[in-house]
Length: 419
Image (cartoon, rainbow, N blue to C red):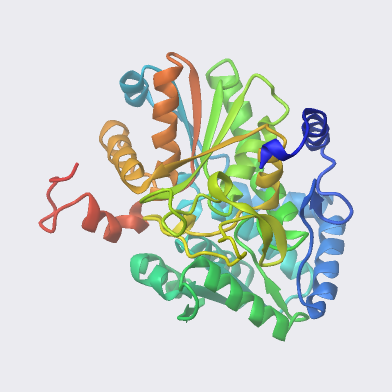
């Protein structure tokens, strides 16, 4: 993909990204992004974009959001020095602890921000989609906080492997709607949420959980999640005395990664690496590594890289991690790949599970399986770059994954046969 443009074009795209010129007036990140939706949704998207421009940077909205992030979400989240991982890897490893945020993942940053915005825009109800369940939990919690009803669409496959989060969503007062059509994972859940929104675009607000979908969602999610990278950058300077040599984050739709990466994009001394789900092999349909193996196309309102066959048919994905099991990616990630600023790699299911076990044993931290993909590739990077500073965004905690871990890493008797 990157090779299809000249070095001059790549340099210009990167310069515009660093200068904050993306998205442009048409919602494009270079050639990616835009709006590809039914005509009935255009007025709703126009109202949302106008509302973002009116409220997002206003003093009173920022004050309200900051109060919620501080007193309810628990920001700033900690930057932890991983001393035992550092010794094992021969590097200086730091973890941005989004697992310590309220509800257990980075998703709450975006959920409370959009919920506050929805209330200002006069929404009567909120709908959301979820894969691993963390966005569903965050949306349910945010809606409870502001007093709006919430409906969460979730694929039947994901409901089974993320049963604890289904229960949490219900306890927080939201309705969970199982999606039994399509691939029964995140892509199908987004499709159902979009159908709901089309039926009532006036009173319903669609709270998208990742940096995907039609403009202005990728922009809005990036702005709300950039708190991760801004905090991490300041914390590295304060605690480590320098910027990291490299930043790692896992990438599904891409919200924790874009929030982690954008504040570092202008720092040319900092390498940036996104890690996707390599599943069980590189074959089409056996992974969810969109930026590694994908080709450009349109999915769920946006032009970006997709996992598709030679006829342009979107393919089902495979990953041990429900949160990365998606055949598309946010358009800004496609731009960062195209401009050559971020390198994207993949880690297999086995590599991610091994990295999860290592972090748990050495640091007393159980990361989400999604986050563990970033640990797997960070360890390999450390082998080639000894004694360098590595920053990893630990996007969420792994409690939600215990049923999967029981089947994979743990024996039926709770033993450690595979650890």
